[in-house]
Length: 455
View (spheres, rainbow, N blue to C red):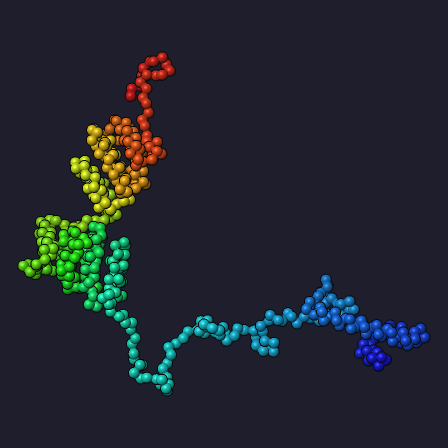
């Protein structure tokens, strides 16, 4: 025990005051007391070591003056090694902490940012070097379109063209395909789809054939395509009864647009056995002769409803109503209204019909127009919105109409009531009908004297 105390004293020398109190003044204290004090100091030192090991992760703390705070016995707690656990720098003191490989390392990285790669020079000494591949030119080869995939590929293109009407887009799409010997089937497919479509779609088809001829198709392709159409007319008539006349009109339009030669019809004289093909060629010949007399074949299919001027649409709707008043055929009026292809403009038809009732003098027009509007309502040709807009337009213009037709307010009230009874207008629309104010020629509060104002 004495040996341990002596070793501890050598490692931790005491201050002068302590020496004077304990060892130097042997008169005041004896040796056993000094040994007991050394034991206490050793025990305190061991306790201090345990405390410092527990608080090693807290690091150094500083007092208000900036000096590191000390423990209970005046010792400085050691710094925590945990502060370097998340440090990715080298523990060996190597490197400057820069990214690995200058930022060019890692999965999916082709090099450092901003690096430009030059053309790789061919190494003649490379064992895989082939002199024949040095001057090779690589091109994208599109395989020719097969007959089975031809219709599946081109049908969506033509149907989409009927929606947007852009011939350049169709030409670009066809240019990306390797049609090969199937190029002559393009006009036939387009005409076959147009036979079952509207008149505006047939007009678009004629324009498409004109624009594709010379870019994607040749004259020989167009001629061979119409030859196939004439041969397959008996089958087309089964699906489209009017295919004979329509194909004849397509042929006449193609000759007028100069994608078919003028001698095309002459080559079939006396050589046609099919009745349908002969009728189609006769129809084309008649139209071309009429074109020489002033008929505009370029307007053979008419113009789509959305492309017509408003004045022309109003004129055609007025003629449609006058023809209906003469014939009384509801189905014919429905067919003519469908062919105009202007469902967004049917409110004009309702407006013109009601104005025609207001301007008429007999009950016949009143009843026939009421019957026609009910028929078109039941067949869903005229929608709720278009019917409402037509009536509202009449309500707005009734004051001007009344100038020419003095009984316009009275007739309108009767027509609106009958329309509500027929069930094709709602109660709210009926209540919006304007009525002319009652004119008082005799005052009701001045003793029955006549008013001086004239009405």
